[in-house]
Image 1 (cartoon, rainbow, N blue to C red):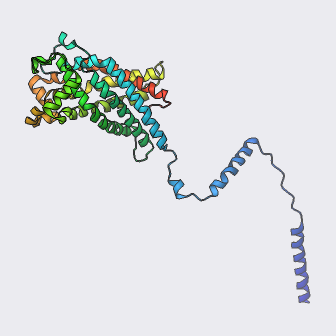
Image 2 (cartoon, helix red, strand yellow; image 1 turned 45 degrees about the vertical axis):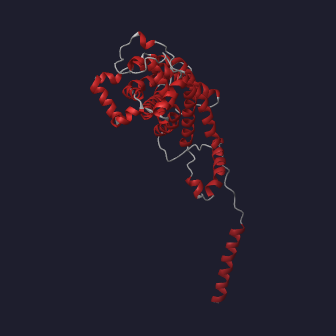
Image 3 (tube, rainbow, N blue to C red; image 1 turned 90 degrees about the horizontal axis):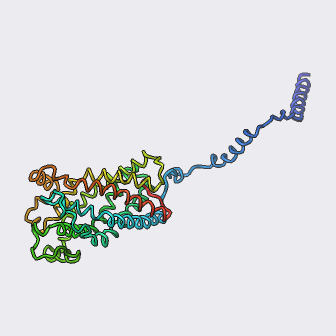
Length: 361
């Protein structure tokens, strides 16, 4: 009957399916796996869990490539910068002060002739920059290195050159707040020792007053504010000089990689070239600074137009010629060559002793 025939067909179909399922499946032939393929499989297995895990927004947003500086790193940079800055300042003041004295006397009005008087008492005014300049120099490099360490881990500051500019600008502010009075006293002593008494000082004055006596006289006649006469000119002279010097130093270190010298000696030579270049370019600003420090604050108050750096430079050029703006350029270049070598050599050596390296790579 049709019903019986249908039942038989269904039974045969079910039996065939059951036999197909119950039949053992022969495993495929094992394939030879090389050691390299095995290593790749192990690596893929190790990476699989991390690929399956969801990525959090905090981990995805953190740029791991940027070195994050910890407070301890910044403090170590600050301390090592203090030591390096103090070491280079002491060496520079003791070795280069005679050259600075001759340069200052040549920049005096009608004093561009190199006579024997320019070399008289070459260490005039050396005490003030050592007593005040050494802490100021230490503060400069301490602030500069700590600021560089803090900014180098920030994604908001792009290039290393911009970091260098910002650190120099910031570090010069406390530096000149501390050093400006000592720089003024030193300049007045240098001018006095080089015959400044014949061009305006009292005939009964001693050949060379002490730094304390010069500072006391300034406070008595001009007030405490008189100690900061020429401070703005000093800052705006030092800032371009330092910007050119540190920028050139960084570029030279990137360009000149092999010199056959040790690491410290190489950086000392490159620092000499960078410093001499900066001193040559910014000589007119240094002349303006020296002339500003020669004028008492009472005279400056009576002639407020002289407070402008461009106006003072234009006045010097009109009265004495453009060459007057480059008075003392030869001593500045010589001093820059020696100063750069001493500054960067002693600074880098001190940083190495502290286990730190300069951030101007």
